[in-house]
Amino acid sequence: MLLNSEQILKEEIIIPSEFSNITQVGIDLSVRKIERIDGGGIILKNKTLINPTYYIDLPIEEQNVTFNDEKLNFRGWFLLPGEYVVHFNEKIKLPLDRTGIVVHRSSLYRQGGYINSPLWDPLYQSGENT
Image 1 (cartoon, rainbow, N blue to C red):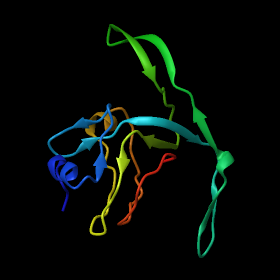
Image 2: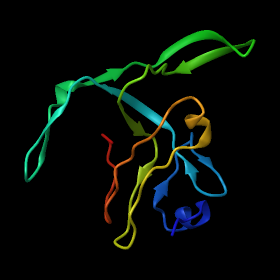
Image 3: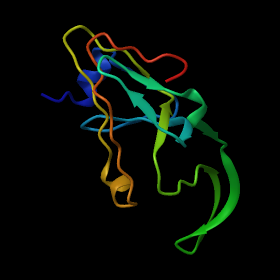
Image 4: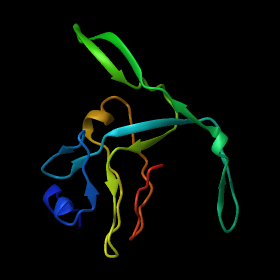
């Protein structure tokens, strides 16, 4: 069963940031940092090894752009096709009886974006580096 935004906030599963968007069916998370993945990992029988040097920080870009004939002051990331790690502003804290997953909104999907979220186990907590 999925929880709605009221239930998520009441159980303090997500601690919103100033950029969060509370919707009827959930909470839109906001981006703190994006890293491009420029390499792979090694999968062993008992664990996965990840080389942290394959994660490249993408700086926030600031510029004026024209989008749909409207001039905008853009501050964010232009993403080319590829794989990325997205770090959120919001804090996540799952209780023992909950499991979490991120689902993308249709606006991201209509741009060709797709979120392939890991399954967050019960008692998962995001830290400063997630």
